[in-house]
Each structure stands twice: as structure tokens, then as C-alpha cells.
Image 1 (cartoon, rainbow, N blue to C red):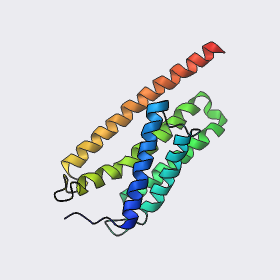
Image 2 (cartoon, rainbow, N blue to C red):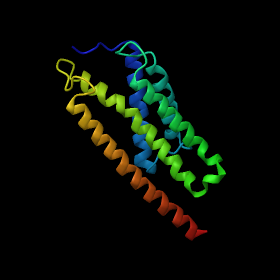
Image 3 (cartoon, one colour):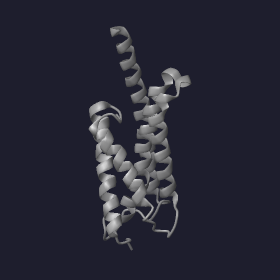
Image 4 (cartoon, rainbow, N blue to C red):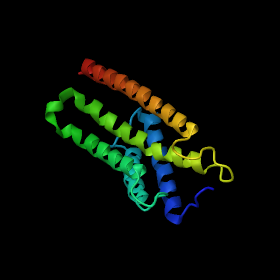
Length: 168
């Protein structure tokens, strides 16, 4: 039997969907989450609100893996935003920044995949829980997309930096 969605749950879902859409827009427009853009600001603010509202939600009645992933996503984002201030990292800073922001985007959808597949369609959800083969398979595909996307971002970032060096 599917769990009913509370008002907080509906708000959390709407914010999470907007955050996901802002992240997708960033990737489509800039090939990365760019914290200096308006869509980057929407993504970062949405991530913060999404994680904060998740603490009022729990199907297990307490702290759960989704909450832990939210904290890790915030830490990855904080690290990504601060990495440019760490001089000894040198040329690795833009790569680490992008990896941190992309990792936060990846983590945003991990609980969302489980929740979506175990709640929809309402009358007969596609999966029974996080151990369902469908959920595990979807998470495996999502992990693969994250790894491939990160590799692609690194190549794009490297070529941008090489182009900039040639111009200057």
C-alpha cells in the first residue's frame, strides 16, 4: 500500500523537482552546474531547501539513508564552492569544483528514484522498496550516467582550459 503524501512531502517534492530541473538546465546550457548563473543559484537554493525539508519526512520514523545522502550532498556542494580558495590544489580546483557539484546532483536523485518507483503509479507501484531489482537497476543506471557524465565534463573542462591558454 503506498504511503500518503503529506503537505510537507508535496512541498519537498515540488522543490526537489524544481532543483532537478535547474540542474538539468545547467548541464544542458553550460555542460556543468555553474554557481555564478541564475540557474546555478536556483539549483543551490533548491538543494538547500530540499535537504532541509527532507528532515521533516521519514517513512521509517527517524533519521534514514536519504537524510544522510542529503547531508553528504550539502557537504559536497560546500566543498565545491570553497575549493577555489585552496591554493595548493592548483589546476585541479575547477575539476574538483565540478565533481562536487555534479556529485550533489547525483545524490539529489538517489532517494528520488526509490520514492518514485515505490509510489507510482499510485494504485500499483512499480517497486516494493529499495531492495527491489527495479530500484537497484535504476540506481545502477543513474550511477553509470554520473560516471560517464563526469568523465565528459572533465574532457570539456580540459579543452576549455586549453583553448583559453591558446588565446592568451
